[in-house]
Image (cartoon, rainbow, N blue to C red):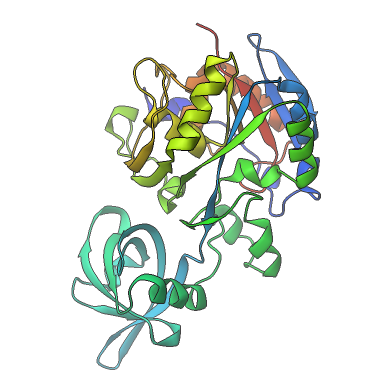
Length: 351
């Protein structure tokens, strides 16, 4: 399909710069289960769409301070370099996006606060590079925590600076496994009160881990979806969680993914019959219209960017025409968009 097919108009004023307070007060557009059925609700209404025996799947990744600013020196000449970590490649190594990348060559170093130093090992396309740091393991993690800052999405960072509120606002209730450079934003809507209401309906909750990479914000530069290459992200579904999902499905429960990251890992771990197996490793699954879903029945997610891989994903869950109509409704009704914005609950289209 042409990438331009996934474009739509979005007023800048609808891009949320702060989350709803409390988190579960955000609005929620329900899409389905019937074709073209839309309902304006709030996140607090989510339990009413769940039934006993369903299983809710959360991503428990935790955002690290992955945006760093350093200095490249060539004799007396200095250049300020922005580094966005996106995929750990070893105890002392990360894949990262550099800006401006043209200011660096392989073998050169970047100096950060606290004495941390990174050497550029290689350079790829789109400003991506391999970095090897002067520290390793837990010592590197501690140094990044000192030198780095919370990596707010570019469409927020362009409009305001990161502040203390973001340290809590940009982590989900379930965040426990450090490694993401972007939040699984559907999870930002959950509060202890909402979780209690969900559990009171007899809904089981499990966690998986997918460390969201900065590639989630990269524009799709190809003209056709077949030519786009997804960046890999590391994920894990533990045996106990895979078994719990399978037990719920065997009893007739539906699998409800909280966020596209949870959905992508579930689909990566599913076999041809839809059975979920334990998973540990990288996934670069790219879901576009025509994909046959094997594992997920409902998806709760935020509103996504025009021409993004995530808008393509939700268009596969229903149809491109339906999602364009739903997004047009959301714009007209002044829903708040993107990471700190409102939510959608999407029922998978029935065959």
